[in-house]
Length: 174
Image (cartoon, rainbow, N blue to C red; front, side, top):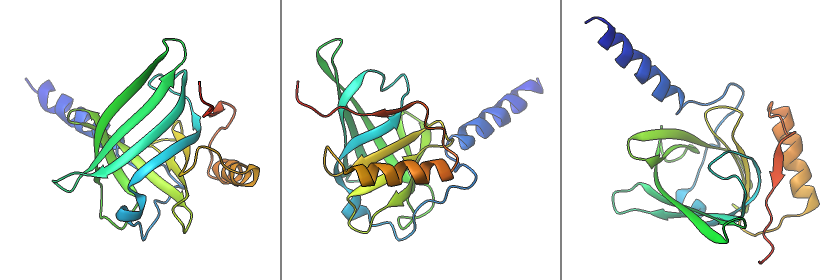
């Protein structure tokens, strides 16, 4: 009988860890939601099963009626010849001026979405999750300069990310 509270406590700790921030990573402050909304192109990522084999990946952020942010991630799977899409919802962990959100694609289960780098024009963004296994370089355009990519790699390395498995996302038309 006493195991149930321990299981609930362990589950709560696990779920809250999924919305945490890795040590040494600071979400951007002065985050402007209205400037962040819209379409972003995935330029580089550490690959995961939910994106494996996808090219031409985009993320579309819109404001929902309830104040949350609607998320549609979309990518092309060349193996199946089909587009794959995931629809989710994001809410702020602290406040709307901090680039730390939690996003859900599966009901009540949320994971961190941390904007830790953002240029003043909202053209490129560095994103991570609750640990350093997650990393994305996003841009408002499907290509970035070599300098932008080099700066991203340098900052990611200094923040402790292992870039051995970094994938550059193909945005060439089929």
